[in-house]
Image 1 (cartoon, rainbow, N blue to C red):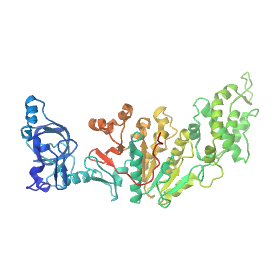
Image 2 (cartoon, helix red, strand yellow):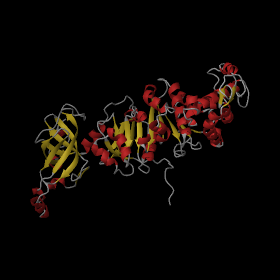
Image 3 (cartoon, rainbow, N blue to C red):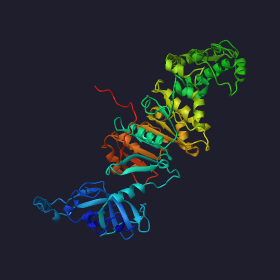
Image 4 (cartoon, rainbow, N blue to C red):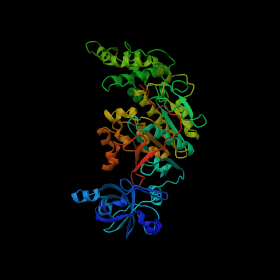
Length: 540
C-alpha cells in the first residue's frame, strides 16, 4: 500500500508530524516540525491528540509503510525553549517523539506484518494514524488465524474506544487462556463477558462455579446446572488411592501407606457384601494376604464411614511384643500414634454434611455420568460446587477428577469445548509449593487436551501460586492490574518492560492481552456484560 491509500492529498498535511531523525534497533526518533502540530484537533471522524503517548503513527518508507506507537514525547529543556514557549511562539519549538515500530505494510500488500530486519530511514515522513490505519491495525493482529470464522468482540483498544477488538475464537483459546488480576480489577467481569460471547457464538463450555458467583448468569436453556452434594454426587470408589491420600493430606511416611491399606481392606469388605471394618489384629498374616489378593480392578467401592476405624486396624505389626516372628498381627502403638492425626482429620471431614453428601453410595445424578453425557452432546454445563468446602484439598480433587474424566473420555470426534475454572490457584497451590503430584488433571489437559478439542479458560488473582507447569502451557494471558512484585515476576516473560510497569497502574476493566497468536500485546478496555454476577463485596 501507498501513503495515498490512507490520506488524500488535500488533508494529508493535517496528519503530518515531522521527519525521522534517529534510527535504532527497537525504536526511532521523530523530529516534530513545530509544537503547534501536537495540538489536539478534530478532523472528520478522526479525533487527534498527538501531544500524549500510546497512539499510532504511519511512517512512509521506501520499503513500505511502517506502523508505530508513540511511547515518549518531550521538549528539550533549555532557557531558549522556555522563553519561546512563554511568548507563545510554539512554531519555533521542535519536540521529539520516540516511536516503537509495530510492523510493516509492504507496498504490494494491504495488511500489517512483522517488520523483521526491515526498518525506517532517516528523513522518512511521519503521520498521525487515522481511522483506516487503526482498523487495519486491529484486523492484522492475528498471526495464526484459525479456520473457525466466529469472532469474539469483548473489548476495545484503550487508546481508541471505538476500535472494537474482534478476534477469532481459535486465536483466543487454541493455546489456552488465563485471566489474571487482583480483587476488584475487573477480572471476573471480563471472564463473564468472554463466556457471554461464547454463548452468543453458540460455543460449548463447561464451568466450575466454586462460590456460586455465576449461579444466575445464564438461563436454563443456555446452561444445564448441577449442584454438587444436592443433585450430583460421586461414589467413594470413583477416586483413586493417590487422590484419597491428597484429599486427607496424608503424610508420605506412615500415614499414606496406612491409608492405602485401609481403603484396600474396606474394598474387600464391600466386595464380600460385609459391613464394618476388616479386622486384622490377632489374625494370621498369610490368610489376610490371600484374601486381599482376590481383589480386582473392578472392586473399587467401599464404605467411607468406616475409614477412620479401619486405620486403627492398619496400625499393626507382625510378631510378638519382643519382635519375635509369629505370623500373627498385633497392635503397633507407634504406628497408631503416627496415624492419630490422620484419623482425627478423617473423622472431622465425615462430620461435615456437604462432604458426606458429595461422596454417596446412592446417587441421584452421577458426576462421572454427567461428564460423559456432556462429551456426547452439545449442551453447556455448569457445575455448582458452592456447597462443598473447596478451600482445602476437596476442591483440588474435584477439579482433578473432572479434568481427568474429560480427557480420558474425550476424542477428536467430540464437539470442541472450553473448560472454565475460576480462581485456579486454589486448586493447584500444592503443586506450586510442595510439588505433590495429586492434582495433575488440569496439567494433563493443558498438555494434551487441544488434540481432543478441549481448551482451558482459567482465572487467578495469584499467578505466583499457580503451578509453573500449568502456567507454562498458557499461550494467551488477559492481564488486569497486579501490584505485588512476586506476582509480576512470574509473568514478566510474557511482557516487555513498558507493559510490565503499566500493569501496576491499570484501572478497573483495563487489561493487557498478550498471546503467541497476536502480532503484539494489546492494551484493552474490556466491555461489561449485562449478565447478573455476584462479585461485589458487602459495604461497610
